[in-house]
Image (cartoon, rainbow, N blue to C red):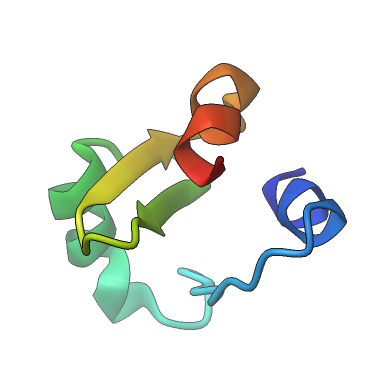
Length: 65
């Protein structure tokens, strides 16, 4: 759902599949505080980052605005 939402908005993203890259699970845990997927990290123009865990449109929409 996150990928479809971002694509519909015309936004580029990098996808990390934890099944294909299990060594990155610790990175996901450190970023999000959970092993729930998806973990979306939005990097703003000022290089600050906002983390959205799961498909949470209420947080994702303003993060990418």
